[in-house]
Image 1 (cartoon, rainbow, N blue to C red):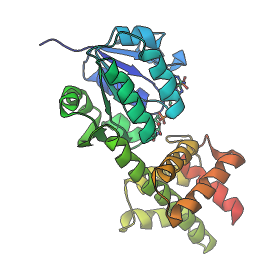
Image 2 (image 1 turned 90 degrees about the horizontal axis):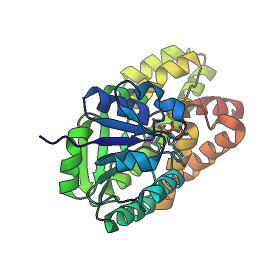
Image 3 (image 1 turned 180 degrees about the vertical axis):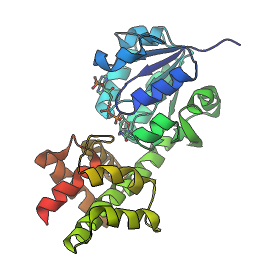
Length: 283
Ligand code: NAP
């Protein structure tokens, strides 16, 4: 069978382990990252390109995993003028529905295909191939992407046309932002009442309130160290995207205020659960 050539653009906290899983699965892989050092450990088994153009010209199916609307816009502005007929683009970044739909249209005008396929799950699920992948786009394009998506996640859910994958992603991240703020406030309350952090986290994780989200942040909270798996500023981006998309509910105002102030006070580059130290200073 003719093997398609896979390209991956954006080797950040998520993109790096995801691309590594495609490499491990044995697909012919090329990668590109704006800061070249993040691509260094792909040199032995894959092709590392130093431009978006070269990567796209030499790939059939191209994955993008980029920070935000601006990053996606900049990268696709380099892609659209190229001869991309017949290629499939899979954007796994968390961006606005508008950006997704605009990108999809621009790609499709050039007789190429596009699906939005953002993910639920952080760096550990990315490394373990247990992400939940929410897809918007045409069935035929998803079918083409499916063999690769199967190596990245444990579930691939098709939700409808372009923009629907992002719609589901913004919704679930709205919930996750509540879980993190709720977890941080609960731990702080218990400490105020004389309960040790590790004991409270054990209770939370073994109770009905425990979840993948609480469990994955437990080691960071116990160590009180917030090396970013998911940067707080990205969580703020997602709450703002959800709010703009229609999450005009009472909690959204509190969440925006908290995460925005935490970013303003210098917590933006830390892991999202570092919100606890921002909240601690407020109490
Ligand atoms: P990250 O570590 O900050 O990586 C962002 C990537 O985008 C890097 O490769 C960066 O390149 C690249 N980039 C940014 N602007 C660019 C530009 N103008 N041109 C070219 N490349 C550009 O972020 P991440 O945590 O991997 O997240 C990536 C996306 O997944 C975000 O939309 C995020 O919301 C979403 N997400 C994250 C998580 C998580 O837990 N981290 C979970 C689910 C979804 P450089 O290395 O050169 O900066």
